[in-house]
Amino acid sequence: MAATTPFRSATQRESANQLGLWTLIATEVLFFGGLFTAYVVYRFTYPAAFAAGSHRLEFWYGTINTAVLLTSSLCMAVGDVMIKHDRRRALQLCLLATALLGLLFLGIKFSEYYHMYREQLVPGINYRAEGPPQMQLFILLYFIMTGLHALHMLIGLGALTWLGWLNHRGRFSSTGHQPVVMVGLYWHFIDCVWVFLYPLLYLIPHLT
Amino acid sequence: MTANAPPVLRLVGVYLALLTLLALTATATLLPPGAWSTPISLGIATAKTALIFVWFMRLRDRPGLVRLFALAGFFWLAIFIGLALTDFLTRGWPA
Image 1 (cartoon, chains in turn green, purple):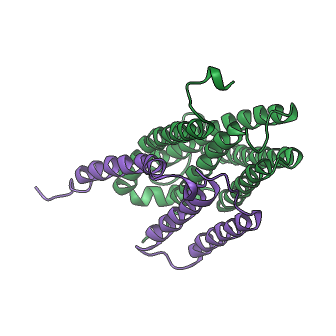
Image 2 (cartoon, chains in turn brown, purple; image 1 turned 180 degrees about the vertical axis):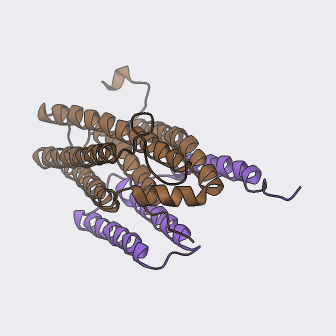
Image 3 (cartoon, rainbow over the protein chains, first blue to last red; image 1 turned 135 degrees about the vertical axis):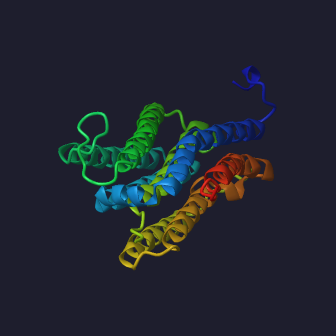
């Protein structure tokens, strides 16, 4: 293996992996950043409509989902420690817990979408809400931002499944588990995106 | 790049700090809203992200170059949002 890679040592390869994945994260920050910028501009332009829209979201769905995602990140971080001690079975349990919590997050998210559909709050499908017309802009941003986040969660779940399969085949050890570290970084980053979406979407104060 | 794994108990401690921050930001909505509400909730979100970056993503074990890359995206995003706002925040001037 060592002869076929361009690296002189495992440490050098690890450094390259780290820089590569953090570069991916920087591009993801700017990818989501376009939406965050649109959000900031329109929130400054239509503050009352954004507060009214935020008030129509389900506070507890968002709050519980934040806790679910933080818990999944803990499981991922613990899994990373476990494989550093060669504990493959513990890693498998951590990966399973991380993925199940990720699925729970998506379940809560989609039941929230369904709830909003029942409330006739889906722009382009059945939006019939009373209130300022620009509230629809907020709700649309809500669906695009949480939808893009949910898409990243689905990719993360696919990556976790791949890790679980590799680990099941005994491919990871304390000295060789770079995929676990890489997927972990990606998963934690998706968590951070939600950490910002939560106050921006669910916690807009009603200023009169 | 150290291979030393942090103790699991420390990660659990970070997790409890994250949940405490979540509880803080959620209960702050019960207070009467003010101009400080959004800066506080965004400050808490930044603190949570810092905890995740430093401990869960283990930036504390990484060399300066990796830390620089980790902050680069936020640096450019701050310029992006900041410069966009210099336009939108100054449009309300009387003619």
